[in-house]
Amino acid sequence: MKLSTLTLSLALAGVGLSANAFAKVADQHTYANLDEVVSTHLYLDLNVDFPDKELEGFVEHTLEWKNAKARTLVLDTRDLSIHRVIYEGKDGTWHPAKFTLAQRDDVKGSKLTIQFKEQAKKVRVYYNSQPKASGLQWLTPEQTASKTHPFMYSQSQAIHARSWIPVQDSPAMRVTYKARIHTPEDVRAVMSADNTGAIIKDGDYFFDMPQAIPPYLIAIGAGNLDYKEMSHQTAIFAEPQILDASVWEFADTQAMIDRTSKMYGQYAWGRYDLLMLPPSFPFGGMENPRLSFITPTVVAGDRSLVNLIAHELAHSWSGNLVTNATWEDLWLNEGFTSYVENRIMEEVYGRERAVMEQALDTAGLKELLTQIAAPDTRLNLELHGRDPDDAFSSVPYTKGQLFLIYLEEKFGRDKFDPFVKGYFKAFSFKSVTTADFEGYLSENLINKYPGIVSKEKVHEWIHEPGLPADAPNPTSDVFDKVDAESKAWLAGDKAVNDLPAKQWIVHEWLHFINNLPRDLSKEKMAELDGAFNLTNSSNAEIAFAWFMLGVGNGYDAIYPALDKHLTHIGRRKLIVPLYKSLIKNGKKDWAKKVYLNARPGYHPLAQGTLDDMFNQ
Image 1 (cartoon, rainbow, N blue to C red):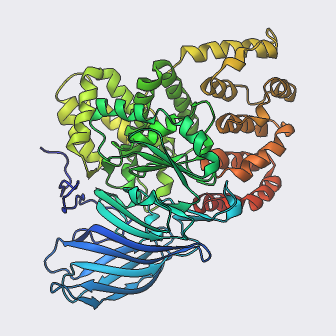
Image 2 (image 1 turned 120 degrees about the vertical axis):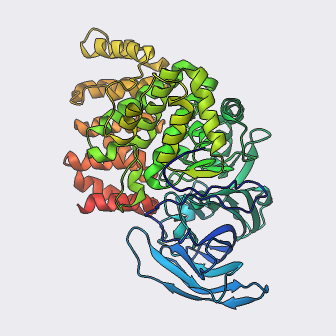
Image 3 (image 1 turned 180 degrees about the vertical axis):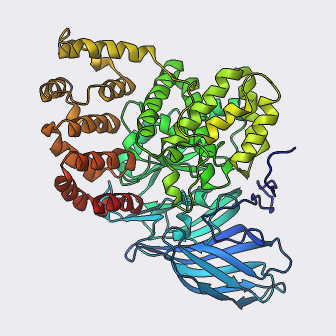
């Protein structure tokens, strides 16, 4: 089957298969010489050193040589101390290997070049990470919920795995891995793998990931973690203080797995467990296979924010099973995942809620499109050497989702659902480019059902900036009713206490707040706050929307609660726009004081973003 004009070397890389699947693409963010040699399996033996804030030990790579003449392995590293390298030769004995560690590049880190006298079967790199590792966060006991144990966790996406493992850090290749992790006896370690070996807390843990995954999905966490099952296939790892609340909040996870498997093919990863991280985690969630990492900011007490779980679960098909080959193809991961997430929400919670979430996300995208450079509003992004973290915005997520909704509406679900399911099956355990997707789309949808969507329209969606004029514009009847209530209150035709807001769910509240006039008077702000105590909302999303409104129009009553919000939450979505708005609205000195106090508890990724913002 002709899939693209690019040369591909793709092989199944699932359970029990040693062959490695990688796409021969120009990944500008790796030093790895994937055309000559590929690491097919990793073995990690690491000690979690909390006092020195480092991982120390070795990684062993099993190598598959693509070039019979090659004798060099190139790995990606960032801020790693490399102590020694040895390799296993053809006769089974181990020998020292020569290596050089190049100067650090601000984006790519340092190139580690290892030279062999013969083509090695395996190579071991002994090393330790640094406290400043971009892919790790180390928290003191005081920075955790329990206040009794330290906590460490990783965030390897996009190219941060190289900050704690010397690895071929490209989504164009896949590896299986095993690991032995050593911690203090009263600290439990978990990984994006089979966590059976982590059930008994003893400080010596063994892990196995039998399915091949891209390196950015290798993940580790360690802390005062308890464990509780939600179903035969799902469980929560969390600090004791948040465990029961998390189990209740995410009780529908099994139903999500079952519904998605029926729509898009059987779940391929065995178990699907969740690790609840401290509030400093910079993202909503991370789709690490078998163990998604989740922010506690979505534990709202009413299951109103569980679309995040649907999103991370959806990655089990779009992203983890079928992976973007480069970070310029990120929309293939996130656009498909946002689409599947919304379909899951519709299946489990109904069409009305799913459409409300579509409408909220679309409104956010349209606002973003007015703020960023036109080239960055294309789906198939051109990074030109920039850090791949710059690729993450609502463009690959929501514009990608709207493109798939567009195709669904044009072709109908009776044709589009089999297409999506077939796409996941055709590229299972493989990495694909946008060109590969376009080839598959043309052959299996556009050409198969001619006269519905043109190739020119597909090109417009993927390669042109902004949204096409005929892009879907999701609207909700529920939101229409909220708008009518808001209009009546603003006009003085309805008292604030007569608003039916106490019956609103979070989506209605977000629509209401986000659509209030940006110059709403302080009197009106105080009126709303007095009736509904929005400044002290326990829902992180509602609080964020309210704080954004309050900062913009000088409602000073929010500032004590805003200080607490910014100090205790590290999720970038919920803090970065607030700091930006504070600076824009003349509150830079106040914001910087809060930031300097909060900074030690933020993840390095959040620190980097905010350091740059305050230094401009």
